Image (cartoon, rainbow, N blue to C red; front, side, top):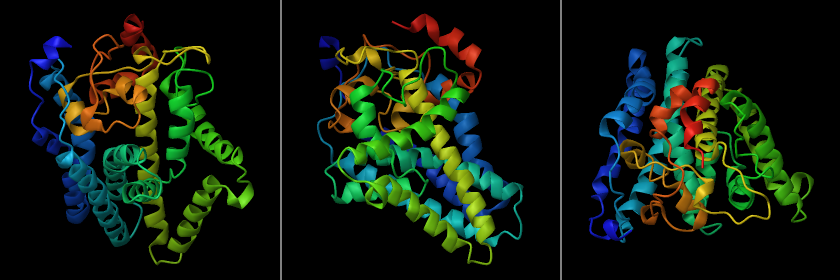
Length: 336
């Protein structure tokens, strides 16, 4: 830590690089055709290479004290996502059938929603309930059909991470495909149970209310001439956004376990100082510190050099993670 204090924080402007993918997806939705694939290519193809080429700092730089640029950036991401969804609906409404370009636009929109919507909502979801930031987080999660996320994340995941009580923590013998099938419904059930424990049953349960609102909006879209195509594209985009979020959950806690009565430490989350992942994902990679101090804004999160370290950034881990035997062979030697 003494070495860290001799270094200056990175310029906040590097985090503006995270706006490249939203800009590409908005442009693709507006222009159409092959350009709808720009988000897919940038995130799934170029992103892993940027993780590798840009590498990681040999010495972890300290966090910044001033938060104004980052607060503005959060809102830019959140408001930009509204533009992303709006342009996607516009594009979907122009299609005469469910075609390849609608699918690629859905994939691109879903991938970028994993950052501009869910990562932003994750950060804003730790703010005071009913505050403007918290309300924006609720809308962002609604836009990807995952309104229960904040409840489950704040009340279950943070408390029971790396234990059997947390549906969002992957076991060592659990591949990503099996994890996806288990964690998505289990997290919804967990959120329902959180509200039930507070006396909110039936339709008074906010998790059920969120689900009912999503069903109502979907049925309303069916009344539009191109409603089927809009709904199909929106569901694909939401599915990709949710799978991307849960992929991140998977790699951040895979194989790290503790007993329910054991104190949580920095050793129960995977971290990485990979520059591209840090810059474009709002310091999501300094995950140990986030769990130890959940209310700390992302720009103040500290690196933990002694915590488990992923072999690469979040983008570069994507493709190996999809092959469970390869993932286990690659990461297992790094388990504490």
